[in-house]
Length: 432
Image (cartoon, rainbow, N blue to C red; front, side, top):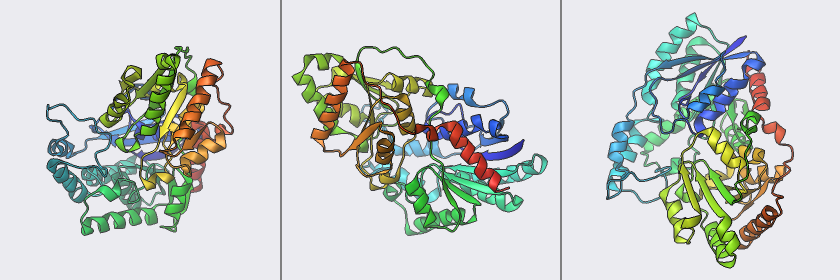
């Protein structure tokens, strides 16, 4: 069996979206005659915990952990992310265009200019030293780094240079073209360093992998290294749960829900319909599963929908999948950032696998809209398209009452985790 070294910051018991891509690849790689060798921190910052994901790690996987030194405890202390009462403020991503306190400004400046490319950079040197020695005694055939954090790519770059091994840089998100990059208070020197490091990774890797076609095109314009698109996807085994309908009209959102993705028009549409129909008001449930910014819930309550709101907070991936399967409408809001035109959130593939209609709100011409149109699973509406959103909700409500909300998705097999793992395996084999 061939061996692939995967350098990743996120690994179970860490939860959240960042961990799932390579956990699922690792799960199915042995069937492709590849043994995954996972290199990951022993003591990472666990912003979310999902021990159930450990069940997806195959017995063939070799897990290597070393300690990492991170400045996040000091960074968060300086960040002052608590309100006047001392309660922690629910911010999904503080790196945005919103106003900042002086403590947040200072902490963000330090994070942006003293820890490049990210606060995990202190792990680069020790990891290169450890892996160079380790690989002499335990050889592998290919190296894969997955980021962000992009420090993982810098580890792989140095190890590949020392060992001569082929190396795939897997970008789950862009680097300097990520939507929040422009909000970092970077000095000109720091900005140049980011650009140089990114260019160095792109040019020295044996192959680049991105998760969307637009990102593939962007990277292809930046380097001569072959750039491949292997999207995220869904695991059929996650959808074998049996979910009994609860009788409510559930508008469900799973995952991170950021302030700049607040679909305020939708809340107004739902409030209007509740006033017009007591039956709709009695049966409507807005279910939020995952980390939700407090501005979102405040907006829902302000529209008079507090009685309809069910905020479950962070849940395991298994629970999130069950919620998707029990939804009447799955909500797919887009952040109000132009860079999001090229983004395909990982949950979109699980949404379409659930068999329920997807209500997208954001840019009507974007990567997410393309997937919804191709599969026939839903539609993207502009943030302010009140009539379009209302019509979509009305149609789904009528189908709900007729017990006919199932969506016949078209061509979604190509987004299966098994199929995508096969694509990754063939790419690795091509580099041997």
